[in-house]
Amino acid sequence: MDAAVFDKDCRACPRLAGFLDDVNGRYPDYYCRPVPPFGSADARFLIVGLAPGMHGANRTGRPFTGDHAGILLYQMLHKYGFSSRDHSESAEDDLVLMDCRITNAVKCLPPDNKPVGAEINTCNSFLESELKLMPQDSVVMALGGIAHRAVVKARGLRQADYKFAHAAVHDLGDFILLDSYHCSRYNTNTRRLTEAMFDGIFAEVRELLQN
Ligand code: URA
Picture 1 (cartoon, rainbow, N blue to C red):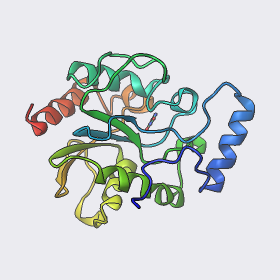
Picture 2: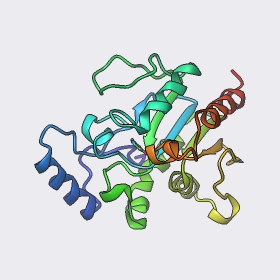
Picture 3: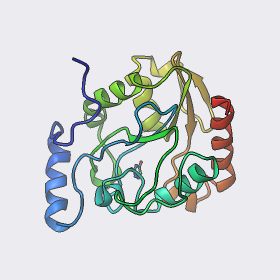
Picture 4: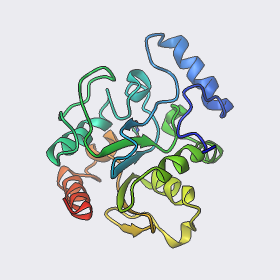
């Protein structure tokens, strides 16, 4: 049987499982479980983030939803025709992704937004399975270096052959990997990632998909 793409009951990482229990005690209304990918598995465009944010995906249960990191992302998804709305409010809103799916390299909220290497590796089998479901000639956008390395690892490739750089395009055989700085509050506030830069990345996605 194929390995799982996602396990909503996963507690494979003791530190993350314990942290989710702790956060759930402090915020009983929060989702506080592994956050599932959002969007259809046969989409030709997959966005890979880092991990759920404390008051965003970890609260709402949908990637990049409810915190600052999702603002620019959903605006761009809408502008480029991948989303029915330019703002994702909750897992219950009527937003639909078109030919697009969003996932995270690590499915559980990590303390200080920083998963450790063992957690990234343990969670990697989900990403590996997810990438196998993608149609030929798809585009994967990695948001930040950790997501980039998780994708390279999931394909069993050598990190030294595929270095992360903003706007770098890597041919991984079955799909194209396109890198972007992460759209975090820190990166957008410091203008490491500007709206124009992110717009350019999405224009490139459309070009790579050829429609
Ligand atoms: N929310 C997510 O789901 N992923 C990130 O990488 C950041 C915020």
